[in-house]
Image (cartoon, rainbow, N blue to C red):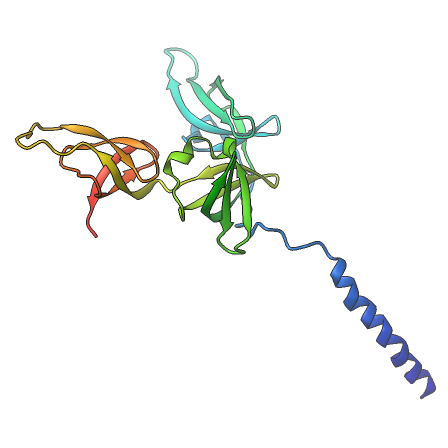
Length: 227
């Protein structure tokens, strides 16, 4: 019995020590990530716009590509890439069947809150923690972002490398010239400034204050939205 009680007396401070040790564990990361994408081997036949591959340890996104068929020999594919860490672009030509490794990237959902100086601040949609992002990473996506915009942040090796906006979104026309009476010309368009700051061409009948759906990839008007 004495042996048993000594074990109990010793275990109490030991358990307290274990409990206090939890205070020294690493903090929960701000990024609530989606499941990691697996790195996959692809070849030139799998190339498509928007695909991100890893070249020399860095992520490159396919901007566009073209295939040149030859009378003799295999076709060749010319690909224009953007380095998502440096912001530079390269264009290379590859033989048919040449292989690439897809970049191991992760995406997290976030909401734009505000900007200050050269930094944009987003709120993690799951953890609600604030995430600062450089304007160099936001790049030209800035013209599609307004307060409260839902976007995706792309991470490569725990570093944010890209901001992705929805392919279509609704904006308000904050400035455009009035529709001229009697102008019934087919295909008549005019410039319009949107609530995000982007300037696109819209049909002549679109008035200031109207809500419109826009293709953010092409920067084109899709349709007027009735609320």
